[in-house]
Structures are given as C-alpha cells and as structure tokens.
Image 1: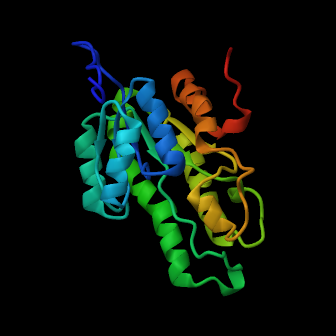
Image 2: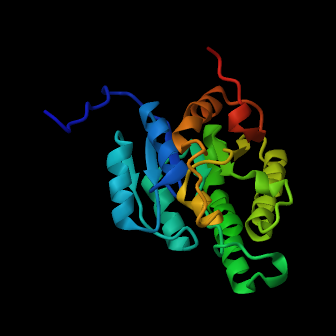
Length: 238
C-alpha cells in the first residue's frame, strides 16, 4: 500500500540519535541520511507543524519533540524520548540580526540570545546526555562554521559564538575519552540561515545540504578520532 513503511526485523536494535534543529536545512538533511542508514531518531525544532512535516520527509523510525532547546524541560523531554543515546547532534542555532551588524553596534540583547542558543543550550543538553554517551561509547557532533576561525566582517556575533563552541568541543574531547567528539564544519550551504546572512543576494551557487550527508554518515560510522572535521574534505572510501 502506498505510504506504508516496512517494519524492522524482530530483534534488530537500532542506534539512537538526537538531532536538534531538524525541521529544515542541514538538520533535516542529516536526519534523513541517518534514518536511511538505519538509525532511530529523536528530532526537535521550535515549530511543531514544520517539525511534523519534516518527519514525513525523514521517514523511518523518528520521534518528534517540538520545543525550544533553551528550555530545560524540553531538553529533558528529548532525552526521555530517546531512552538510550548513541549520538547527539547539536545543530540548532540562530544567526542573529539580519543584516548582521558590526560588533561596535551589535545589540547586546541579540548577542546574548545568539550565545544562549548556539553555545549554552547545546552544552546544557550535552551535559545531560553525557552519562548515556559514555556508557554506550557514543559520539557528540557540534555543528560549527568557518566563521569560527576566520574574521569575516559582520560575523562577530555568530562567529564568536561558534568559536566558543569549537573550544568547548576541543576541551570536551580532552576530558571525555570514552566519547567521540567532532566539531563539524559543513561549509557554505543553500539554507535559510545562509540566505539570512546575505539578504537580497543570490545564493543559488551554494550546494544543497544533502550534498554533505554521505560524508556525515561516513563520519559517524567510521568513528575517526575526535577533532575538527570539514565535511567537504572528508575522504569517503569508494
């Protein structure tokens, strides 16, 4: 019958991943890729309707938990829905004001939100997930950006937040030897956030998020040592 999905074989135990910000863009693409690779997923986004639509596109074994990653109760709901966690992908984030202001005029309330969403909330979720990740020899992916390491004009808010994510990831990699920790730069992609960074400009030359999915799936499957990963440069065996 059209629209039905095959059930997994009895006794098959799927690895479990939590992916935040999965209603669109990179998060949606990564979730679909892991689902196709046989993972059970718990995904979130702030918009319940958008997240439900995304789940239909993701397919497979997926649980949606709409909510704001800054909310402690929402973070607990994600972990409760997952049960066990083999992989946490901290993808949810905000750009900040668009067009992006220089640091001399950056509204501090807006900067505070950028840090809260991009740095503090993912770390809070990571802290809660770490016991399960340690027990299962799991992995953590923090999505970063080249703006974390390059001083692009106008990217001081988002870029400095991602720089904090990268340093936190590096320290976690040194502290959490039982867990793989990768801070992953997907490159410039054709997403709504990237369009917001360049209002009014044509970004159709940027690749779609789906183009980096094979590299991402290879990363979490091959499990190289912890470190910074540029997906566009990741070698995938033929």
